[in-house]
Length: 171
Image (cartoon, rainbow, N blue to C red; front, side, top):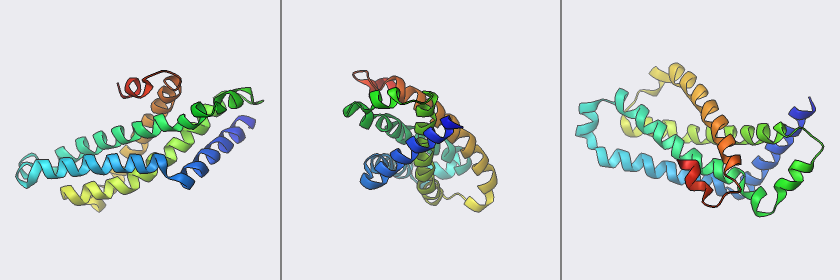
């Protein structure tokens, strides 16, 4: 129970800091919008009609979400590494898994917020009837988001102290 309380405190701290600055969320959103716009304008209506939205949109959506989320995963540990706050978190009288769970919860919230903006935008640009696929899309997004955030948070923490860690995280 103490681990969950500590994880909640870490997640709340991260989300509070993010909502004050919008640094990571703004970068994630800017990258996601750039990718969506690049795909929408470069493919054109003829290609979209020939390939079909049901085959095209999932690939565009997943690529957009993965690349934008990578920015957030790297930035989720950036503040702790810049001010050496990670040492303080590690010395806290709590289970170390609470750090991971807190960062995971904060990353989940950030990616869910990103998806709330990107999914309707992708549906608009690529002509997808969102209400018709809402239930199946929500199920796939839930599993995808949790898996992406779980592994992304783990790898974000691993590459945090490495030089050129952001390029390793992308690979």
